[in-house]
Length: 303
Image 1 (cartoon, rainbow, N blue to C red):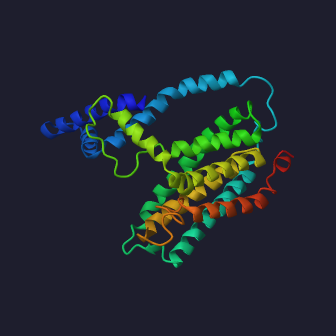
Image 2: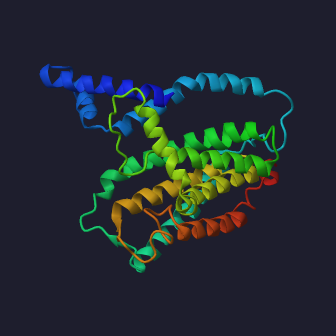
Image 3: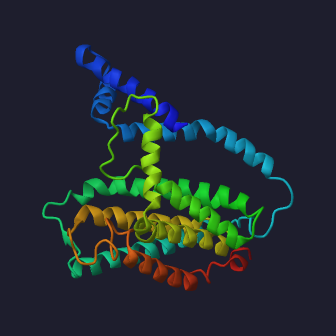
């Protein structure tokens, strides 16, 4: 759907930008026109994708209501916990995930893969934005992937298969963006969206991409799904997710990657979630979570 409508969205927005150059428009419309003038076609594809998701959401929810029949299994049911226990789970997950990822960044800085930025943006000004992103993204994605979709998947598959399936979907959707430097010859062509979609899917044929990028997102999805099954709730997964986002975004604000380091791109890719070293860190995170989750196991939470 996004591939079909994105060229038309592109043309409409560019027309709005052209109109703003010769006519006085209301303030909000003027701002939108200026944003449209600067935006590339890939941004219009991304916004078209979000629009299609919103349009399709009522149909998804209707289908979910039809599927929610029959007895609830132990795996699909979620345990109600007190707000204090929920807060402890969120904080524990956030500290584990964010702390280990930040520790990885400090190690990489010590060996010269990253260097502190000379003039980093003021963290105090950007911290509220980072916090909002971490809270919103962790709540929405955990509700959708580990709440709704994993719960439905568990009705038709064993827990291991359900966790792998939802984690593959989680990783795939995070890479539904065009590679850097992607150029579309004629963004207004009716098939321009399909041209961009082809370029997006093409990087899935690169073996290095699967080892250094896709594998880490798959591991993240598996850890989050496993935490959801172990606790019978979403709170620990939300904490893990938020911790990763906080450390990832804060580290990118304060440090820059050194180009052409001998550990690139296999050891560490373009960022802290790409490469074999981040994958090893996620393995360590899973080990720490194994012991931490013993406190929040379903049998404890349900007492």
